[in-house]
Image (tube, rainbow, N blue to C red; front, side, top):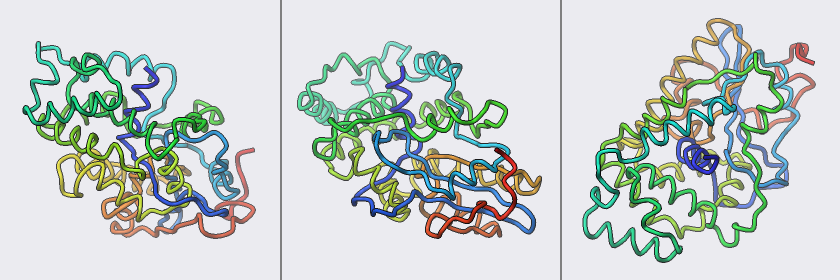
Length: 312
């Protein structure tokens, strides 16, 4: 179940990378403000190599001051139980169809060649709908890509690390597990199949491996991140990109505007892909008239906002 959760998070919030991180690099961090309040946006990565030092004094200060910390979804024990149920409800065929029934003969041959190359059995994914098969194969390719990364020591991603530090009454979520599963399950079958074929085609790309993705995230290279998102999800105006990123980012932008209107001290921690590109949350907030500042490229003051630290 944890492996399935990891696969889901990887596509929902993609990631990063191409070049090695600079010594003083830091993941992207924004402050968004109106006339009298501000919130913080932090782009996360959901699987992280164990020894990577990604935290900065500015990030830690902003996190300490936040009254509420918003995640895409709070991944607690209840969430794992919900994922088990929803994976069966939305991810598996229940009408007698098999994955092969969605594919053309040529697509079946492409899939079989991929499975043979990686030593995978067809029976593993035949009961799945195309979107779930897509995530299964994406997880495998991310774990193996990038030249020797299978040996990379991994740990839980940013969200799970932070959840260990944040007491329950400070945690908030922007979406539910049901919402996220319906994002995938609601895609037209043809779009699910197209995404599956893109995943297979990109499997051997060295810039799709976990280490390369983590490097780009750590370097805060938002523009390269946007290019990676385009490669994984299709063009910005494609149905998959709109559903997985654009529409969700616009909903979140509305919620963040309400936080600012209510003078709520908040940090929003979402997959870094949501903060990149022309429909990224920072861009949308800037277009809505808010002041948006990249804060990871300057020296952190004693307090991230200049106010006394209210959380000790």
